Image (cartoon, rainbow, N blue to C red; front, side):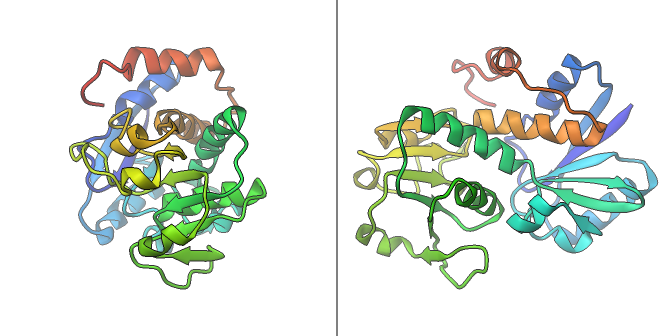
Length: 266
């Protein structure tokens, strides 16, 4: 049995172990999946050693370590290099390799959004690892995206980054939230006031709750649940060296049995 895990902090909201076991069951993959809630990046070192010696067979990386883990890698895939952050790591050919399947998950969300409405001017809230993968997808799709951050600074990954107080001077039709604001248990919080999104479209990468306060404010919104499933599925393909297809019926079944809207916690 192969052993995988999620590295991040905090992880109390995570359902990744259950999700990965369900995905694995569709393809007869025997696996265990654990949560590694570490409060400092230095504590990742023994986990990387475990990856090298075969104790573990791969990790997902989440907030706040998608960039901080980079010094522990020997190699990054071209996609991860372009993004500047990783969410999936594994050991192959005696090298610790970082990849980014958040890209695939967000691309799936954008494809859903673009079937609903043509987007002209998207903005991204946040400037961390999730923002970088979302920004790269939007750039590859041909968008010139403005990034909004509490601490705007020059960043080689973004063409334009502004503070929240400058947002009123910009025209935008899609808001992509990559911040944790509004995530369980702080479900009444929102990174933007209702007046800034009531006539906009929103993609919120948060999946717990299924509908955030920001999403409720918007004209139309998509949550992060599909992205969570797609990125996990892609990560498993990498770890097992397979190219399985995530068909719509499988994705919908996963949502129905584990993430239905009647669930209070995910």
